[in-house]
View 1 (tube, rainbow over the protein chains, first blue to last red):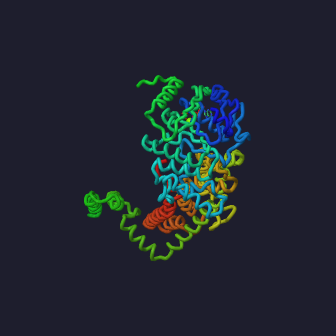
View 2 (spheres, chains in turn green, purple; view 1 turned 60 degrees about the vertical axis):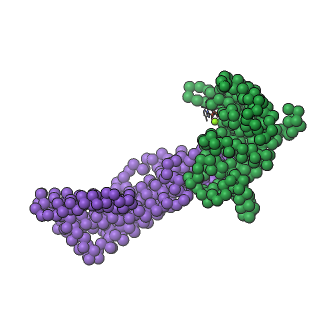
View 3 (tube, rainbow over the protein chains, first blue to last red; view 1 turned 90 degrees about the vertical axis):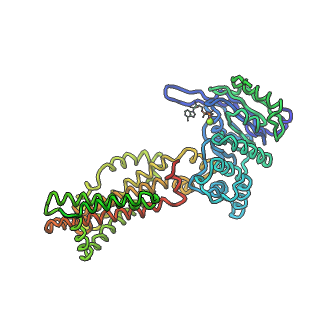
Length: 256
Length: 275
Ligand SMILES: Nc1ncnc2c1ncn2[C@@H]1O[C@H](COP(=O)(O)OP(=O)(O)OP(=O)(O)O)[C@@H](O)[C@H]1O
Ligand SMILES: [Mg+2]
């Protein structure tokens, strides 16, 4: 913690609550969320389905307004979507009517052509999609589509990336590959990443810190420090300890 | 009894039998031919059983078609019909697509225009014929106006619905990457709606081709619809009537095939496979 205290705060949630008007009353989804994410930190938001993880991400992403409290990035309150901070959506957010190349170039419209082409090509190589520049999303596999989505976000060199279960729809093998690639890219670029998941293992494999939520209305149950170096040894006793702790917090007994 | 009906039936059956094991592509051609031959057999048989003098057999229609082609008149009428449909259809697309995009995208204009559009839409274009003639007289303008009306509503409503169905994720992607104003239309609204716009164009052209024939039968002095009416009036030439119907059907198929080509473009293909 002491080391993080030295780092600059990037994203802060101050008393964020969110309720939705639903048929037959008001649904409290998030309650009094306080959280500070440091610059360049990789934070996982972990919690049971329906606890408000996507809602929280939509709030920090500027798509929804909190009912109470505020979210600031670099000290400035978030009031709407911002091209410097990009979303990787839970369902496919890339455009099916555009080629992989055009999708990835979406955020680079204002750059001169040569610069734009250089960045797109570099990003395509980074996510391992070389050779598929002109393919349309329907011609790509699920994993490749998700790579395009990640590349579209990375291309604009965002200072914060929001990922809402980006690998949820992928098979377990592809998911593993994508995880290690996202870690590799993050180590290279050092963006701040807020990553929503309800997969316990996924969160321990990738995060610096794991924010565990209670069931709805979502509150912060505990923030778990992972403190393991990448690449992580999934068989280490520390890993097992963290895993047990997370299962405990989530109210699921971990039977071995 | 002639041998024609059984002959048609036998050839039809053989068509099925011999192409049973060929590729789907080949069968896509031969099977419809087989079905048509069976239809011809039934038609021929019915004519022979009923012995109604006025109703033409397939061969009468064949002869009438030759007569039509020789008479030179057919081409003029085809051109007249296609001219009205082309103008009316393109005008409707030119107005309907932009209007549908704007009304679908902006909640305010949707609130204002949608009820009006929905109120006018159920009125059959045929019901407009008297007004079309009143305004434009007998002639091309009235026809173009009617085709405009009959294409305008499917196109506008289809475009509107397509825009209102744009997925939230895609809208948010546009917002997230800072797309504004005309860029949103060019990069998201229009391409997202395009597959459904093409479908509505297809429906509109089909309706237009139906309506033009009806309009020409009632209120015009040229075109394929007028040709049908004329053939009946000059001595009950039902062979010419049916021959013209065949021509109308064939042109309808060609028009549909032409517009379906639009569905092949890479930018819209995603809209026709499973989503
Ligand atoms: N726009 C909305 N209007 C009304 N209720 C909503 C809205 N968005 C979300 N909710 C409700 O808020 C709750 C939390 O939803 P949210 O999508 O944030 O959950 P989540 O934690 O992301 O779940 P999952 O892990 O299943 O994705 C749900 O009960 C949902 O019904
Ligand atoms: Mg969610």
